[in-house]
Amino acid sequence: MMKNIKRFSAVAFIGVFLLILNSCDDNSELFTISDPTAPTLVELSFTDLELDAVNTNNPAITLNWGEANYEQQASINYAIQFSKDEAFTAPIVAATTTGRTTITLSVSEVNAAAGNAGLNPFEWAKLYARVVSSLGTQNSVTSASNTIEFNVYPYFNYTFDDYFLVGNGVAPGWDNASANQNPPLFRDESDSNLFYYTGLIKNDDPTNADKSGGRFKVLESTGNWQPQWGDSRDEGSDAYSESGDIAGNPGTQSGDPGRFGVATTGFYTFTIDFAAKKYTLVPFDATGITSPNSLTIQGSSTADVTMNSLAFDGHLWYARNVRLIPGDVKFTTGAGASWGSSSSFSGVATAGGDAIPVIVEDDYDVWFNDLTGRYILIPINL
Image (tube, rainbow, N blue to C red; front, side, top):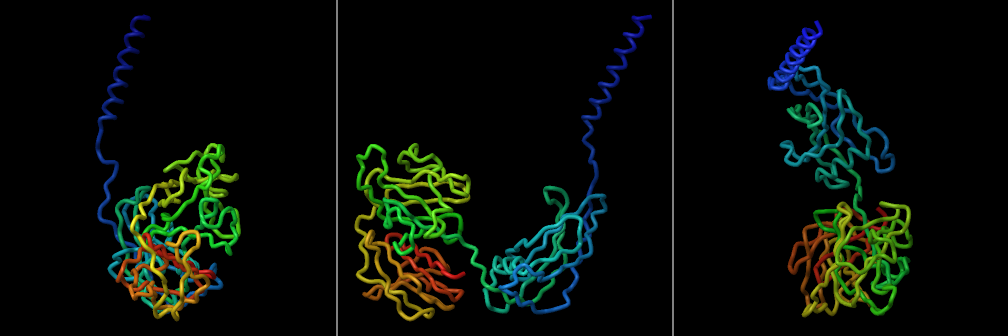
């Protein structure tokens, strides 16, 4: 009797195993999705929307739509897209929601979307909106709604961060006060997380045992020690290096980071990526590059403004608290040569280049580097 039970158990186990194996080999589709019915975006009850720069958290617009139909029991994702053209050549996602068919956007959200879509501040322009549906965490099987349009008058939203140097290797020494001309980092014209500084970095005491010479850190605002950025290694363990990781107080930690630095005096290019949290600090060959005798800001945005060269490094030019109105500027030498670019706020000026657009009125600190052509216009009040 016991042998029969054992035999039966073995047969049953084999049967169950074959059933499971067959199930694992089943590659049939769980479900199929036909072409979905797109969501239908309801027209707005107004045509013009002037955005209030004071009450930015107030609701600005409510969008409603008829839900998409995928003929499946699944939650549907919706992305609200804006564009400056009806073809949605470069759409901006202003918000997302799942399982809902209405959303309200604040003044600041619409203003940011309009700016990111390419609309100029303080000008009436058309803004196009649509809703794009999708399924699952991978946002697959998308379907776009009809397009609606309205006129919008955005205010200016300065979305950039600015950074400044402090330390005994650079112009101001270990003094963070703005009157000491803390030179700025120059922001990349297409990547707002990437910054450069090319110039003289001094180490007046290269044989010092504690290697404290030739050092500097990065501040987010002059006159304040935090937020502060430096080498991710603790001070004292931060040997001179041409590359490494960055850390910030309070960006990544509660204590102050280590120091960037060079072992010998010379010209260097410092590059820092705040997204990747990486930096490089490598020698720069300044041989044969001579500075102009004078440099002036000229253009439709201002009367002529004379720039000063930094006493620490004559390749760096600055003009503080310059009132600029919408228009354009160039950097012009006493000999009549000029540098410009088509990029507002920051970029690389070239000889004979385009006039630099000024898109919003404010008081600016303007900096120009004649080693690289890099410039930055930092608004003081925005």
